[in-house]
Amino acid sequence: MTTLRYLGHSSFLVETGGKKLLFDPFISGNPLAAGIDIDQIDADYILLTHGHGDHVADAESIAIRTKATIISSYEVVTWYENKGLTGHPMNIGGKWKFDFGTVKYVHAVHSSMLPDGSYGGPAGGFVIWNESVCFYHAGDTALTLDMKLLPAICPALNFAILPVGDNFTMGYQDAALAADYIQCDTIIGCHFDTFGYIKADHEAAETEFRNAGKKLILPTVDQQIQL
Ligand code: NI
Ligand code: MN
Image (tube, rainbow, N blue to C red; front, side, top):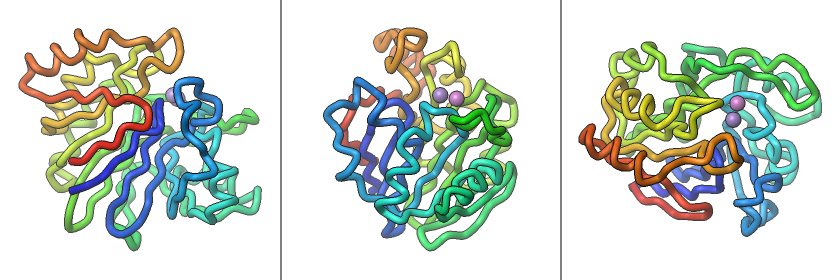
């Protein structure tokens, strides 16, 4: 059983392998996440899919307070290391065995720029596995045929976090196809409703997945999910 706490937008706190993994913290600037106190978030690792502000805004302050290690692209990690923070740089296609499990940094079709305009390297997603779970956080991405590689290069996925809000990423129709490509039946949607461009039709999205024989969970902010 893996516990996830949805912190809004694409941010999740996942406890696995005895560690707390914080993904893409964008909380203090997200009106939908106003009820979440970022000073109460504990993290051992902060995983950043790419450098856009709606994925990294709170990474620096949380990393300073918690001393969490930042895992991301070489470019994003170097940017944080230059601020005195600790990181583990990766690049697309590489994997590394951490003390909570293995992380594979995989391709995303998206752009990446840090808040000050610095180049963020390629945007990515993470596949994470250990003895108890294997899951995928796709970050911001279009639907891409590369997703068909995941079943060949990673253990079977128990669940996946996919963007569904459209405009900046794939929408729910493409995400349902992505679920097929990655051979995963349990999908948690992210990157929806936070701003006007990505307001999602929840019922239509859930129906699309149901018709594809998949389950779509569209979490509410601060929802705890057990999978
Ligand atoms: Ni982005
Ligand atoms: Mn984004």
